[in-house]
Image 1 (spheres, rainbow, N blue to C red):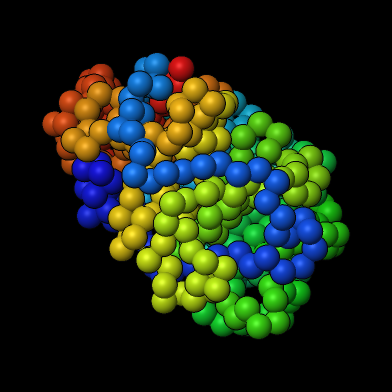
Image 2: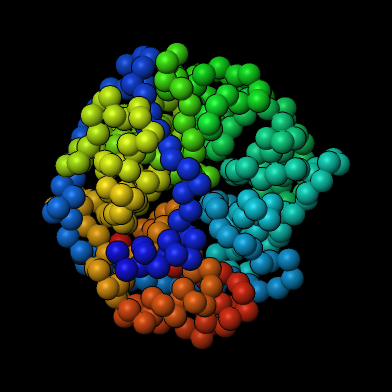
Length: 374
């Protein structure tokens, strides 16, 4: 809790508004829970460090045009690390040693330029940037950042992932009312490579109203799977990264769970336990941001060897886990964004980084933390 509280004060976790839960209306794949994980909030043990084998640090190269206000999404592909800051509308690509390869910073209205970076996704052929304001999905070379071509967006979307067959999956959650663009009332859309809609999933009911989103990432990926959920849920969806279809719906059975009626009342969302962000998978482990009554809670880990959910120790310490942004190979990946955060966690007993990492932080650059799991 100490780490989580400090990070909330620093603004790492910013809940812009509350998000209502996903409705169970529509087809069976929209609402049936295929598997349930039990979470007894009163029995969560402060044992995350026991499941971390080691933590390694990767300082990222410092230089002009590299500074970011925040890190919104990180993706590993093509032996590169892609890091996006949506507020500054930049995507930086580094090699696996932390050396900068290119910066995508093309704001504007001309060819190859975008008005916003709402999300991005990457495969071996393209780096795609989602621009709702410009109503486009723009493609760039994933190794150089050179502009290739635009595609016209058929919908408004908050997040995107490219599938292994070249199709796309988009997430959309209505925010405080209807979208300015009329579109089918669904949360998930699968399109072909030309952005023709093929599949629509997780529909909104006629009386359900709208959701209000509180974070900028609705998908997480691991190997051949994509996870999706929205703030306030007690369940998440596992999608096939090959075709975007729902494989299973996983419910989390909290002690203080909402009744079906209360789930649709946004004013009550902080009176019950729910997921505060989309979970992240690494190997056999599931990382969850669990929000409890009155917006308390914290970061929790679950796995077949953890005997229930475990959390960080109250006072931090060695191997305590900062909020991951993604996973890679055997590791959850977190970001150190400034020297103050680093000094704070070291003061709680967290291991010190090397001189290169400390110098990078002093220069305003980022350091990636790799939590190698047991």
